[in-house]
Amino acid sequence: MGLDEIFNKSSLPKETNRQMGPKFQEWINKGFLGFELLSETEFLDTNEDAILKGNDSKLAKFAKEQLHYDENKGLDFIGRFNNKYIVGEAKFLTDFGGHQNAQFRDATTLLNNDNIDAIKIAIRWCFIY
Image (cartoon, rainbow, N blue to C red; front, side):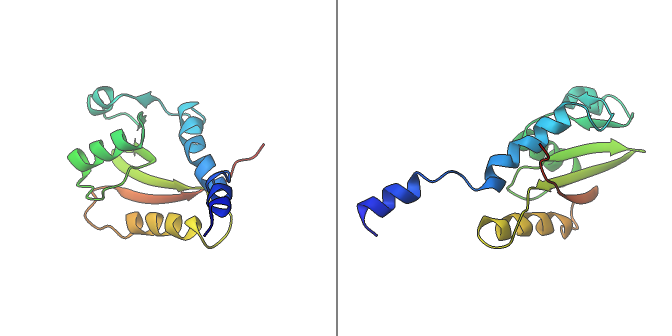
């Protein structure tokens, strides 16, 4: 691979699914699900239905400490509904191949993890303009 090809490859825009990753968390934070978004302290101090507010590493830390999550990867969603915890991975999948396959594997790894004391969900989402 020559210098020109290295420059061309390194200056390509991110794949769409990588650009869209943060959009799910932005959508959650806007309150469209109709549940309160709470800090970790507030979330632990109540049994009400709610969504835990935080970035993927904060959510993973909570899940490791409270729900026996044992992966080295962040989470996209933690909620509590009817006194049951739900953890989730949101994936923007548009096609097969490349990074899409890794995204799909991340989601199925979560779904197949029997150590987690929560309902596990994988969310395939799309961004509508």
